[in-house]
Length: 333
Ligand code: MRU
Image (tube, rainbow, N blue to C red; front, side):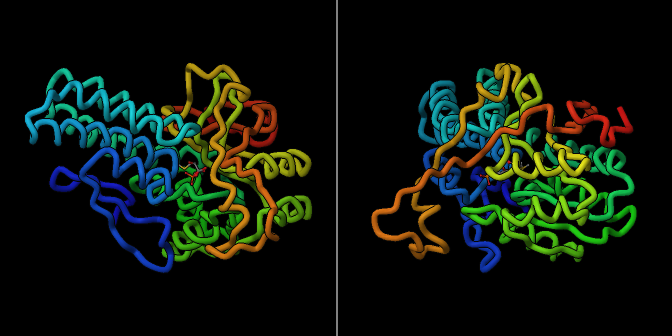
C-alpha cells in the first residue's frame, strides 16, 4: 500500500483525509482531479507532492495522446496547473519540472520520468534514514512534528524514516508525536504509522512539546521540510519553529531530514518562502464541528520557517549540512 502510485495510466492515492478511520483509494485520471486532491490534502507531504507533480504531468500527456491533442501543450498546461496547487512545498514544482523536461521525447518518456521520480524517492528516503540515524546515535527519546513517514512519501519517509532506522538499530524508549493542529497529521497519521511499526509512542498536543523538551524528557527533535532556502532557513508544518526554540534552550539537537530536492536554489532565505494560508474553517472547527464562537475569525498559516541558526543539521540522501547549532551533535559528514 503506497500513499501514491501509478496504475493503468492513472494516479492512485490513499485518501489521507479519512485515515486512520478508513483506508480508501482514489483513482485520478485528470490533472484537475489531482489538483483538487492535493489541495484537500488527500495526498500530502513534500516528497509525495514531488511524485504527484511528476505524475500530474504524466496524466496530462497520457490523456492528450488518447484524445489526439498536442502532447507537449498538454504537458505544459498540466505542469502549470499542478505546480501551483500548493505554494510552499518546493518538491511539487520540482516534480512537475522534471517530468515536463522529458515531454519533448513523448508520452512514454514523461511516464518513465514520473516513475523514476517515484523510485528515486524510495532510495533517497532509505539513505536519509541511515544517515540521520548515524547522526542521532544514542538518542532514545525523540520528538517529531506533522507526518513525515511513508504517507508523506512513497515508502519509508524522511524524519520518520530516521526514527524508524534508529529504532531498528536499538529500540527507542519513546517517540513523541506532536498532534499538529489544525489537521492533526501527527495524531492521525504519524501515530498510525508508529502503531503499525509497533514503536512506543505518545501523542502530545503541540503546546506540550516545549515543556516536555525543557523538562529533559526528549533527547532530540527530528522533523521534515517543505522548502529549504539557500541560507538553511527551513519551512515545515506550522508549529515546527516552537520545537526548534525549545530544543535550542534545552541544548538538544534539532535535525531536519529532507531530500536534496527540497533545497530551493531560487529561494535565498526564509523571508522568500511563500507560506500557504489555508481556509480559516480548519482552525475554527475541530473534526468538522465549529468550536469557535459565532463571528470569530482565524488565521491559518500552514507552515512556519525555522531560522538556520536554530538547526543542528540538515540530513539529505547525499550529505549532512551542519548549521547554526552544529555544536549539538553533528558527528558525520
Ligand atoms: O500540509 P502537509 O501535511 O503537506 O505538510 C507536511 C509537512 O509539513 C511535512 O513535515 C513535510 O512535508 C515533510 S514530509 C516528507
